[in-house]
Amino acid sequence: MTVVQASSFVSAASALTFSSPIIGGLLADSFLGDYWTILLGTILLYIPGLLLIALVAYPGLLGSTYNYDALVAGTLVLWPLGAGALKSIVNVMGAKQ
Image 1 (spheres, rainbow, N blue to C red):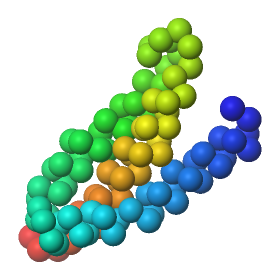
Image 2: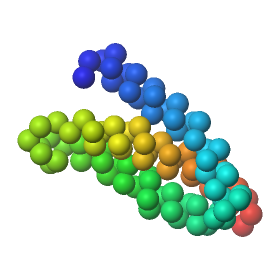
Image 3: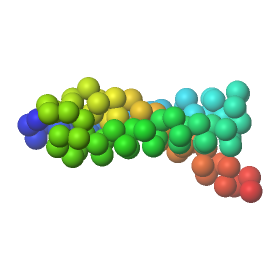
Image 4: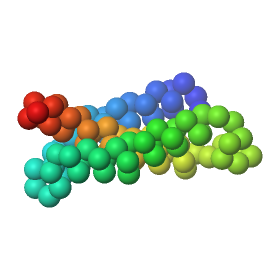
């Protein structure tokens, strides 16, 4: 990846992270509640996304060739959605305590 491609990749991940809290807020307020949204967002989205990013960063762990699809799934889907869901709920749940 060139420097420009990597920079745009990180910028896209940041944009998704800061635009996805609306999804977490809707899930928490309408369907699941604060606790279950935090729990499911952490277990199903945030942690798997971080694990994929870490595994792709270590050469040869996910195969002999660079696994670009795993990087995209971790950086542009799982991690931003999980982080966005947590951003919208963690402070509210803490204030309710």
